[in-house]
Amino acid sequence: MTKKHVDIITLGCSKNLVDSEQLMRQFGANGYTVAHDPQQATGEIVVINTCGFIDSAKEESVAMILQFAQARKTGKIKRLYVMGCLSERYMNELQNLIPEVDKFYGKFNWKSLLTDLGKTYHAELSEERSLTTPAHYAYIKIAEGCNRSCSYCSIPMITGKYHSRQIAAIEQEVKQLVTKGVKEFQLIAQDLTYYGYDLHRQYQIAELTARLAAIEGVEWLRLHYAYPTHFPMDLLPVIREHPNVCKYLDIALQHSSNAMLKKMRRNITRAETVELLQTIRREVPNIHLRTTMLVGHPDETEADFQDLLAFVREMRFERLGAFIYSEEEGTYAAKHYRDNVPVAVKQQRLDELMRVQESISAEINAAKIGKNLRVIIDRKEDDFYIGRTEFDSPEVDTEVLIRSTTALQTGNFYKTQIIDTQSFDLIGAII
Image (cartoon, rainbow, N blue to C red; front, side):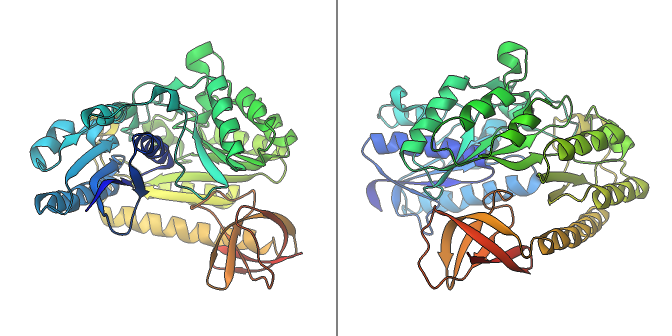
């Protein structure tokens, strides 16, 4: 056990990661050494930043807390603290279930952890972070909360109403990170497209993106988690006309069947979704779209699922993820619907959907053979340098595997010819 050392473990999404990075900066300012997601915890303090989105995420978070509660009980660590979405939602239950935890914090009050330790929360460092990502890219959280009312989703109960950060504060954060060598920025929020509406009664994601793209040193800017309903069309020319705004959009659609879209309370129809996607592709040539689908929602019929498969085949998303419906207490679906799709059927549908997407992805990747693309190098593994194109977000998308007889620098861009494909990845050669 090392004194004045903290191990921070982050579960869940990149928005949680930003919170952990801010906490790490505060610990560092108070004289602690900090490790993130260590293979073996060696500090006197462990902080677990939890996820509470769906059953599998909650189970992972609880298992991690129990593991370190045992370490706390046997004296391997001195203090254990828990923060994040799971404890925001289940504070009382967790306190009773796992008393070995010194204190639970929610999603937003984690700053008091410092003062509870007798340390100082440095407000002047509130926009600073200790990056856990490779030094050349970072996530930028532009808002918290969500004003949507999707039937299956517990996030608004955890995060509350939508709250946009001021554009000036986001600009300042990006400028500061550029001075530290960050070149690539992933804009994240529960719903990017709602950005600014709570402050000014108008959507400002287009203005924000354009202003960030104008900052010298921003090489790539990528947009995550758009919402299809009331999509701000003025964003499309910004993506098209700024060369450093990646031709990439993560837009979660969840389903295509009109019956399911209505039950999910998505406030959009299949026809409107198709029209939106066609407009996006027309206005931003060669854009790569990532989406997320949900299978097994209450009352999803085989016809609904077949509609989804047909839709995916027709739209040919470059990137697609999917998950199985799990009933979350307190949501509209839990209150008004019966979870009546058998687990085996849910899994079968998920597997079939991903097989369809695997075939589409393989065809899209194969079409890149012979093309010259700009690739940023993330790391070296064995005999390969691993990089990405502007069409690929870190950790979730396709990677480019490159053999090179000359050393390549992590964080640098290289003109690369795609010469082959391998599973979900591309094989490249430096030009």
